[in-house]
Image 1 (cartoon, rainbow, N blue to C red):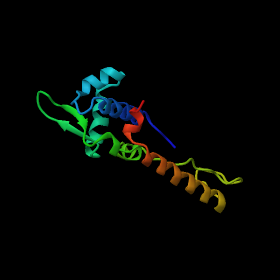
Image 2 (image 1 turned 180 degrees about the horizontal axis):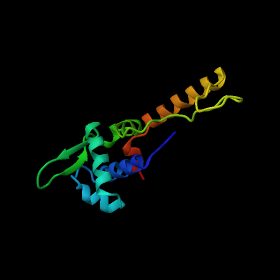
Image 3 (image 1 turned 90 degrees about the horizontal axis):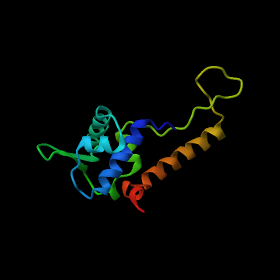
Image 4 (image 1 turned 180 degrees about the vertical axis):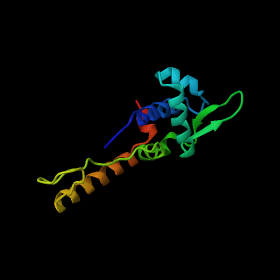
Length: 133
């Protein structure tokens, strides 16, 4: 399972916005707070906006806010919007060479169950869960 820096920064921004209780926040404010490149944060915030997780506000008082209550935004949804795929490592069958792994049936079925359980876990955790004390 790969979790690039994009996911870390996206989750930082979302938890920060959740704690602001509906206040519109500037991109520069978030970037400064977490020492994230403004350019990188802009890309992340746009992905989250396109994914229906953030609302952008145009104008002098422009910025970003959560598009929905934090309780209704799951980690799985956030990762999907950011293009982060939850996947298990590829295992190579003993004796096989190369990058294409072939798993014996029982191992492969076990990994499918793990992947399904991990996805369910990420679907059950919301941004609100991350900011609870």
